[in-house]
Image (cartoon, rainbow, N blue to C red; front, side, top):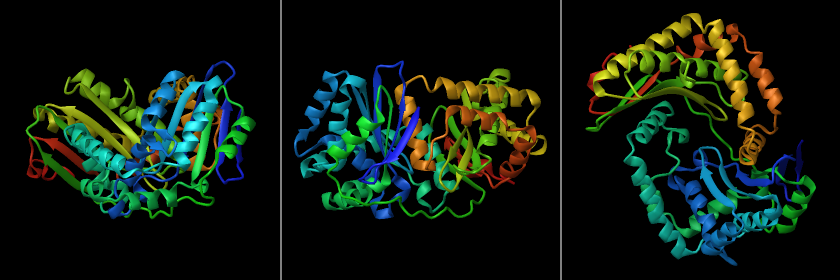
Length: 415
């Protein structure tokens, strides 16, 4: 059963009991991500993700790690463009320890100068590692091109100049503004009790009251664009796509069906035609990403530079065919079966359920049951997908390439 309530502090709590498991997963979902940073703050959200685990006035980073290890727990965090999450997974009998640690780091981070300075180097190393991965760079360049001049196009890790120079006081000010209960959802699943968790969170709350979701500005229009980063790599990395429906758009269920048919599964058009039939790559797929006010549909592939033209020609052909004719009855059946099974299989772990609860409550303001989500996908018709294809697959396209090419090599490709 899924329960939710707004606590006296202003935090929202959402829980789901899983009677068959002994684990409990709990996470704090902060409604601020990299898109909510100004250019002079670019990277602070990710910086805070690292810093909160460095300790509090009464806990060191080492003691947090040892206490978690002592009960066989798992603790981690991650930053996205629209939120930051801190979570733990441990036995239900040790949930109070999880509440102790997470509440302490959320409301009382030490942000000691020496630890902040040490973590700068860790994050800069992470940035360098990211830049060494062509598959990461090509998607970053693609996002920058699609959302040109908008924070959604900025890399979550931030700008090296900001990471190097931002002060403890500036990080603290960002934390004090965004890490407040009105901008936080706590989600828990597994061997949990809603009322007990609510009391435990209230008893441990020592932060400032108030807070709200950040004000956001939607990105402007996208213009067709080619972006090439020349590197003498053995394999070319390519991302090709366009804007797609936002997170709450009614067409999001039809988009899930389209994505699977295009490149989201082993039976998809691109996997079959590019890899299985012609052997032009090892990996190819499509991906849909949804934000509050926009989204992306993209195809990603790594291929020999000699094969890039042929691969892109096939992708363009499939875009055109789908825009003109939509998907087949068989593709609709396969996509629905995949989405149904994928949804149900993802719910067998308390961590996955916690993540679903937290994301939906934070981003949508409510949580749909798995049955409701599946029902909406099953109601999608071929006509729904055809209408969607005719819309988004004819929108301005962006091509991003990392490999031994120059921009001139793709002259006329988007014509």
